[in-house]
Amino acid sequence: MQPLNPEAPLSPDLELAPIGLRLFAFVLDAAIAVVLVLTVGSFAVTSGVSVGTAAPAMVVVAAAYNIGFVAAAGATPGKTAVGLKVAGRDGLRPSPDAAVLRFLAYFVLGALFPFGTIANLASMFADAQRRTFPDRIAGTVVLRELRAA
Image (cartoon, rainbow, N blue to C red; front, side, top):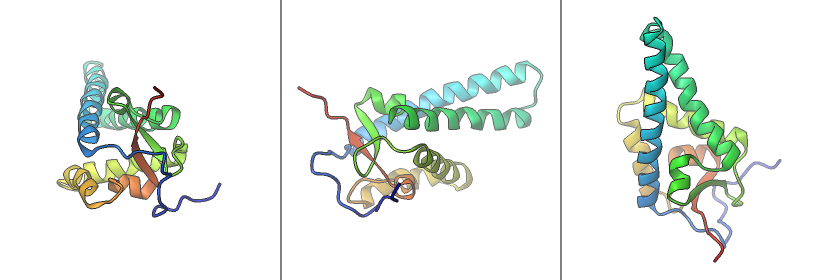
């Protein structure tokens, strides 16, 4: 498989996702992921596990949610709800490797750096193809899912 050229133009039949829809999808996915992570954390703590010990399981849940949906379906539930998809620059579903890279970049930016999530989301405004830092790292774009009429 050839590596994707992150600066190659998109196919003309692909439509970039509007920033507003991306932000709304992010909020939906964050809400879903928070519920899942807190459910796992609560279950662990009520089972007698310390929060520190439960933290890795909570990260695994967040990773499984993001990586699993992007690799298997090309979109998280939040993106699907608003008609968006994650794709390689060819418009096809990203590889599992790209899904892992996207999640790791989101995790590092969001978990390790103050205001990393805000800077990441703001990076869409500075990119002609509305890519976030994780999109640039993984060679992906977020597209509007064009439905056949």
